[in-house]
Amino acid sequence: MNGADRLCDTLLVNDVDVCFANPGTSEMHFVAALDRKPEMRCVLGLFEGVVTGAADGYARMADKPAATLLHCGPGMANALANMHNARRAWTPMINVVGDHATYHLVHDAPLTSDIESLAQPMSHFVRRITTPEDVGPAIGESYAAAMSLPGVTTVILPADCAWGSVEPAKLAPVAVPKLKPVDMTAVKEAAAALRKHGKRAALMMTNMALREGPMAMAARICAVTGARVFGQMSNGRIERGVGRVALPKVPYPVDIALEALKDIDLLILVGAKVPVGFFAYPGKPGRLIQDSCAVVTLAEIGDDLPLAIEALADELGARQSQPVYVAEPRKEATALPTGALDADKVCTIVATLLPENSIICDESVSSGRVFYQQCHNAPQHDYIQLTGGAIGEGIPLAIGAAVACPDRKVIGMQADGSGMYTVQGLWTQARENLDVVTVVFANRTYQILHGEMRAVGVNDFGRNAKLMLNLDEPALDWVSMARGMGVEAGRATTAEEFTKLFQGALSRKGPFLIEAVI
Image (cartoon, rainbow, N blue to C red; front, side):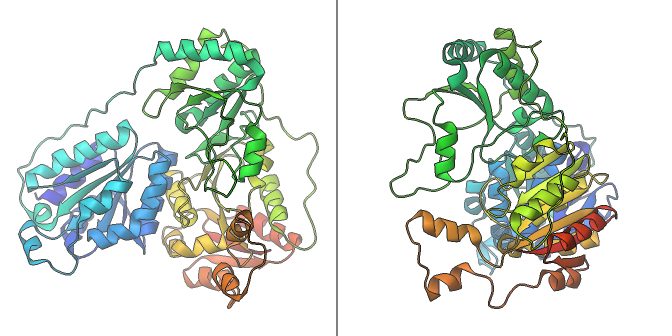
């Protein structure tokens, strides 16, 4: 038995049984060990950003981490953007980064780099393995760290620690630290503030507070206090649809967000942060609440958020009240759009035809802004989205969600410019025969950046600006790209064409891509 075997065994005994990988020479002993462990599912990504994005999507739906296998510092550097997104979603993840043998580092070979410094900004926990016998403890510590925040962890595996011998040992699961108990002082403070402010108060929630049960309990609190409830602008996962709370999120555009939050005098934070603008704009505030708005923290990430909401409901006598904001079935059938295709029509068709128990992976960016609200009354589904603003996560998120939930239809709402960052993920969808429908909003531009230019006061675009913001010279051919990676695909230019393609994709298993030309 070698260190790589011990690494696999430690993962497996802790129920980490999926590894998204892009290995290199330093990791060959790890690859060989994985080959000896058929209970570990290994999924190859052709780019490291696909690997970490897929691990993010997997953990959001599985509520447990996957492992990743990355090649040295430069390979991990390719993975950092989606590690950042996972960190912003509080996603548990165990990154295993191969490195040169310990005695080879002195030679400063071409791939030598400061992996710790690269990993630290995007990881909650970083640990370098020092000996073959250190592999098990390091992976155990990484697992516990990932599950206790939860968060992104990185373990550095020198090649000689992977191939070096270890003594056989009987392994036991690592004890995971429990969530922090409810702070009753904070509960009483929040309850008193809610009684005082009533209709001018709001709960701001994220993370595990956005599951069906906690949201319903929050809606009961709103029923007895008159308060409102919001989700953060970006969240790792929200359980949505008929019978669940139709939770509004903080809007992305600053002016719309300011309008939505202008009447709030009290904000109760449940794992969330005070809402701020995604960017700064001349003459506009950074915080999206009034300066006079009081802020009370009920619970933070790492606390037991559902239990904190229950405790607040008990303090207010709200547990038995009828929740408000619960989505009801549409009373009348929604007529599907017709005619020339645009982004809103795509969103309407998808929301109307959304299948029960599906998973939405949303990186539609500007094109799909109406989609979230349109799905309030759709059949029950899970909604996961880009969280950290580093584009290129939509296609990988769908991979991970589909691996975690193979019996559920996954629908990727994908902006075309963002999709090009990790288009290689389509190949992984084909290889694994994942049940993913990818809807590409093909506006052939970085449309969100057109809006951002206007937001900073630039309304007339010259040749250079258009060259940097448009994707039309030449236009991207998503159908050809998808087919070249083994994914069936079709193009729609009208609402009728899109409806036919989408219905066909829903009726079959396996990956399918629709290029919606808008």
